[in-house]
Image (cartoon, rainbow, N blue to C red):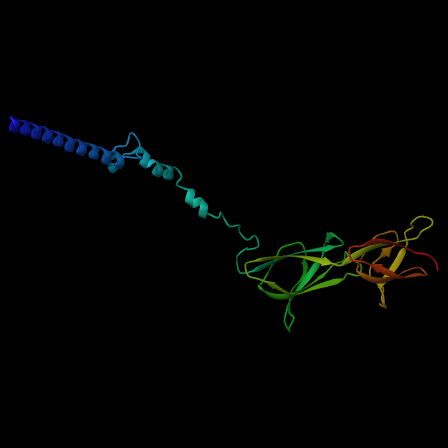
Amino acid sequence: MMKKSKFVLSLLLGFICLTGCGGADVSSESSLKERSLAGTPDNYDPMAAILGDNPDLDLAAVEAEENPQQQDQMVDSGPVESDKDYIGGTMAVFLPTVTANGEEIRATYKVMTADANATVVMDNVKSGVETEIAPGTYDITFTTNKIAGNPELALRGIELSQGRRLTRNVKFPVGEITLDTPGNGCKRGAIKIRQKGATDWMPGKFSTCTPIKLMAGEYEAKQGSIEISGIQVYDGGTRTVSIRKQ
């Protein structure tokens, strides 16, 4: 009886051990699976992920395809503006404008080679017009009858390059004066003008009450027997000088 009881007890303990060991294996397997799937979406399909059908994993690729030009925009600096003074060809182009006392005036100019020979290349060329000239370095002299005395102004060592246009504003340092006869209103009368220290009067006809453009400097004038000295002309200035009997 005692042996039979021991046998039954051993059999019962063995069954309990077998059941407990099997349960531990199932619990361990379940924990391992849970840890491996932690952090994945509820609809995650391992086989679809391997085959590339997972919509969550394809999202970045779709967004990149929707903006294919994004990288090009980052490196594209835009079109480069063309040089407006590049004209091409074998010649150079010169385009001078002439101003005096703040306004553009008509003038002519002469082009000479800037070397010991000083050869005249072109003469009596009008300002304000594009002119083709062979490439080289030149001395260019401007003159105008819009300023009393037909003065000259020279530009030295002007380089004209092949296939290019050179635009230049030539400014004469000029002021404007008006000689008047106070007392009975301004009465027009003929006058003479010359630079201080000069022996000859300027060519041309001048009169009182009429503005006269002169190169900046000091001048003398004469109306009949009346002489006026110390007439100062300033670049860009405008003034009136009264003629009074001495």
